[in-house]
Image (cartoon, rainbow, N blue to C red):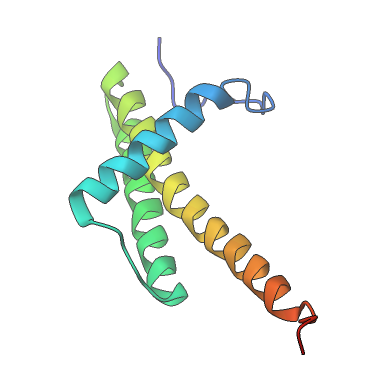
Length: 111
């Protein structure tokens, strides 16, 4: 029986290869739907918050269901992947920013 009150223990991202495939696929789905997005950090935060809200809604629907089904689990996983994809995009931007700053901070030997 599926139950909301089950305790889930961190397994060290045991399914990380599958998760990364799902995130790459979700990224492509988002690009197909919206094109390459360009936003400020506050806008990206708003997008991430919206995705987390959808995840919270899916979890609450699972919690409130009289007879939780596998469809509830699928919805939670889908929303978690969407939220994770947006959050990883933000992290990727920060890596790009750090690389850009390092490259601009290197002394130019020609001058």
